[in-house]
Length: 263
Ligand code: MG
Image 1 (cartoon, rainbow, N blue to C red):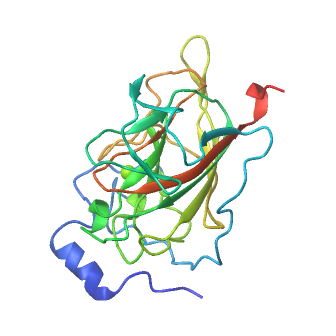
Image 2 (cartoon, rainbow, N blue to C red):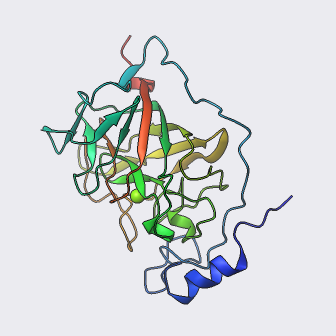
């Protein structure tokens, strides 16, 4: 049964002040939509069934990236200590302190993490509970408070930013813990710098699938189409975005898969 995503007044208010999206951006190849098009259909709202994978203990071969006690695995840039706050088993973005990223790099992997957008609701559209999970700092799976907070669909929670809206809006209310289970496959280039495999991502949000091995069209910039013009190693770092909102994260672990799996 289709659900009404947002109240008409909420959509009208955003559209009126121009914040729902953009029409002065390029068309996304293969679609009829502009990058960040506010008229692109809003994914249907699905109420998650429960806590799904929250609290999932890392499997025995997992790399634990955050167990709630320290940020030893994380840095700002290559090696500046990660300055985010830790309390009660979670980390919290300290606005304007910088995005943090893993010191270690991984190629193809299964990633589990939990997040909570700020319980104190401030701002709207892209200004409310914005963070992100970025691979190599350039391929973003959006983190946003998308609970009764319309924005352009390719920028809502779980979107492949600027490219592909999620298949559903499975967001929980602000302040509640939510889970992402993400499978990421790195892109590959040959020795001549020719792209031979695009990045692909599968995302399950609170037990609801948002992307099923969806290929990325490239990196995920703001207001532009992405591309693969800059070859990089298959091993990528994982970055959590400081977008000036105090989003929280906890229970982050990862399992390498595929050809780079090391027994
Ligand atoms: Mg973001």
